[in-house]
Image 1 (tube, rainbow, N blue to C red):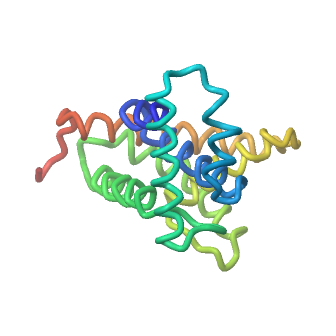
Image 2: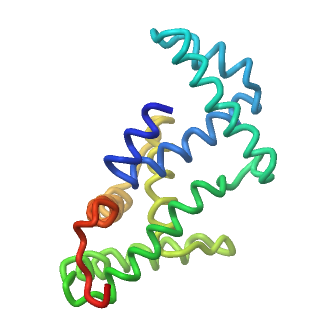
Amino acid sequence: MIIASQKKKENIAEYLLYMWQIEDLIRAYGLDIDRIQQQIIDPYDISPEQKKAMREWYESLIDMMHAEGVEQKGHLQLNKNVLIDLTDLHLRLLKSTREPFYGAAFFKTLPYIVELRAKAGDEKAGELETCFNALYGVLLLRLQKKEIKPDTLKAIQQISSFLSLLAEKYKQDKAGELKLENE
C-alpha cells in the first residue's frame, strides 16, 4: 500500500507492474485475507495502525477482484485505467512534433512489440499492454530462476527503456510540465 502509492508518484510503469504482482499474490493466497494477514502483513515491523491500514488495502483489492470477476486471471479496473491513461498519453506523444525522441524510441521498440504480438496468438493486447506483459513475464521468469534467452533480454532492454521514457513523460504530464502542441 505504501509502496504502491510511492511507486505511483515516482514511476507509473513500476507501479503497474507492482500492482499486477499484488493481484497475483492475492490469487496465490486464494483471496484469503487471513492468510495474507499471517504471511504478508504480520511479518512487517510496522505499527498496529499501519498493519490495519495494510489489511484494509488488501481487503479492498480482494473485494474489487470479486466484484470485477478477476479472481483467476485478468486485471482490476483501476490497473486497466492506468493502462488507458498511459495509452492516451502515448498517442498524444506520438502525434506531437515536440516529442521526436519519444516517437523514435517507440519505433525502435515496435519490431519487438510486433514479434511479441505474433507469439501471443489469440490473446491480442494493445502495444503498451504487450510491453507490460513482456516485462511482467520476464519478472516472473527471474523470480522462478529460469533462463532468459539473449534475444529476449535484448527485447526487454529496449521495451524497458521505452516504458521508462513513457513513465517519465507521464510524471511530467501529471506535474503540468509536459507541453504538447494543441493543448
